[in-house]
Structure formats: C-alpha cells, structure tokens
Length: 289
Image (cartoon, rainbow, N blue to C red; front, side, top):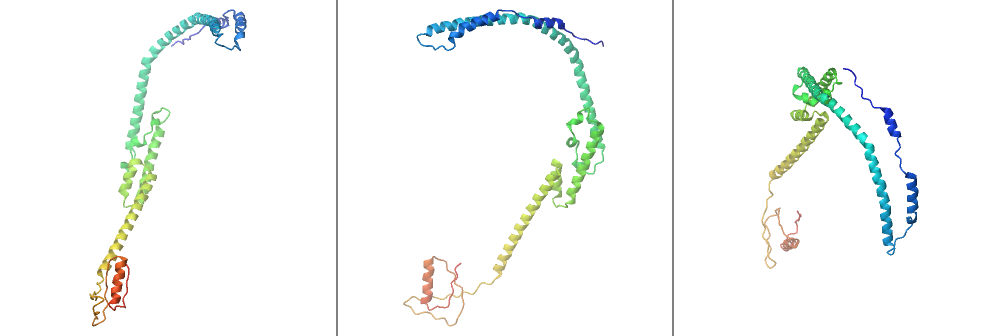
C-alpha cells in the first residue's frame, strides 16, 4: 500500500500568522485614557447622579463598539479555519470507516486467542500431578495478566506448579499438627488457602477446648465435694425443753452433745441465748453461719 502523506502549505500559514489586523489602537487608547481620567477618583453624590449615569452610558457605548469590531474580525479570521477543520474531519471519517470493520475483526481474533491460551492452561492444570486435588482449583491460581501476550505460556506453567507445590506444603503442615479438629482446619484452608489464618484458627480451637476442660474439671470438683458432704452422718440432735423463768429448770439425766440450728434476727438470737442461760446451760457454743 502506497504511503499517503497529508500536507499543509506552511508558507501560507506563515503569511497568515504574520498578517496584522490593523486598527487605530494607539489613537483610541490615548483618547480613552483622556476621557476616563476625570473619573478615576470621582465621588458620586445625589446631586451628580444624573450626570454620572450619562458618563457611564457614554463609556459603555465606546466599550461596546470595540467589542463588536473584535467579534466581527474573529468571524472573518475563523472562516478559513472552520473550512479547514471541516475538510480534515471529512478525511478522518474515511480512515475511521475503513479501520472500524477491520478493528472489530482484530479484537475478535485476539479474544479467541486469549480464550484458547487460557483453555490450554486449564488443561495443563488438570493434567498436572496433585497430591491434594481437593484443595487446589484453576480459578484460585488464575491471574488476569495471563491473558497478556507478553506473559508467556512457560511462565504460566511455572505459576501453576508453584501454586500446587505451595498448597501441598500447607496441607502437610496442617496434617503434622495431628489435631482432633483436622477436618475443620482443612475446611478452613479450602475456603481461603491461607495457612496463617488456619494456624490462628487452630489456636482459637485449642483455647476453647482448654477452657471447656477447666470448666468440666471445676464441675467435677464441686460434685465430688457435694457427694462427700452428703456422705457425712448427721449429728444426733436431742431436743431439750426450756423452762420459763417461773418454772423449775429441767435437768437431764445424762450429759449429751447436740446441734441446735436457729434462724432469726440478731435480737431474737440474743433472746435465745438468754433463755439458755436461764435454763442453767453454760457449756454451749454459738457459731454464726
């Protein structure tokens, strides 16, 4: 295909860029400065309001005439520029129409090539030897950059083998723990392929078991103490009647030891103790529980 070169007459451009748009800039500037000089430090009052508004209108009229000429000149200057841009856009459209159809086909072919490349890598993954096939997957090892042409098939194969080897090392480490929760640890690993997370999870399970064991041991100790207490014989209790102050004290025929349990307020307990004394009982002991 012959090379097509689009060129522009640079000499004409230089003439255009050097063309001066002439106007009476110098004279107008001098006249304007002379006209506005009295207004630089003007102080407007209600008495001079009408005159000041007339001055403002006169200055704005001059300003408008200058801007109108600016717009007119810009319009004349941009006419050739607009015509030039329109012709350039027409030429670009010819290129775009030609490229569009071909570009769509190129993209489709490249997409198929990517799909074929990834499909071949999936087959390679499936055929690779795996010690723990249940814990590896192609979707886990897949890297988006594999689709790039610059990423070689050989490097992808290395990535796959490295991934499988890493998983095997991780599973071997988990199994070397000989944990009762090995199944739970392996499930955890299958979910995130993160050995560090699995090891931390294992410590959590160990701490939970230790806490449960301590709780169970404490419960056993409490039960044992309660059984021992229940096995002790109840002390013999002998009821001894109390005599009222105006009655004769009852004197037992023999000395006995008994346990007396009373529940009451402090004043009631004092009253009971005084009754013991009144009954002639001196050898007693009161334990508050």
